[in-house]
Length: 219
Image (cartoon, rainbow, N blue to C red; front, side, top):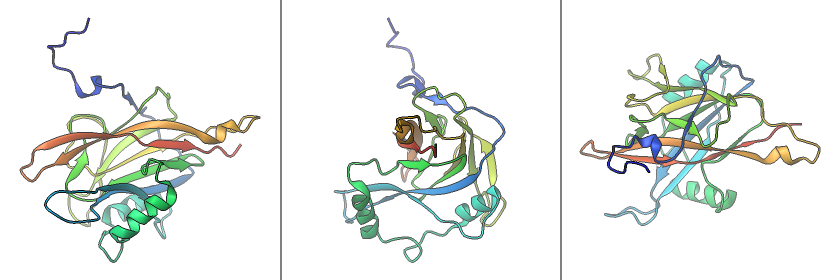
């Protein structure tokens, strides 16, 4: 029987499998942003929109160019869709679908940035993990930030004890190939994104999102 009086580490509440560490190799780079928006303002929130959108980066060929462009992108009302458009976009895609799900079609380097200063990737847990042991299908988890605006990115391997990081990256190996019945094209792998909500008094509220990555092998 488990000792219910002992102090449990956060990752003991539910199983999280760390991503492997190996040399990155990829054929494509995808950049995503995760945002939170309130359709109506007021003392208390009645509705909250949390979603993810792929951000097209122009004139970038190398990973470092994508990373710098994503970190430096200024998300203002004129450069990013209005709240109403965000809500419409989520509902239009599929109101049942997890708005944080996305797909990969080849070996891909994935960049994800949190928009806003009210959250960060977890200081007490790995920023990203898989729900099953997928070996090295997903690997090389890394955190990124700009210590100085316009400066070179500060990149470190993912892990505990890393505060004030709002951008991560990882790599995907070759997606699942279609089998003879064509079932491989809709394989989904579950992830956990571990975040900290930062209160105005600097108190931390840990939360976990669980998006899926759809493995769309080309066959």
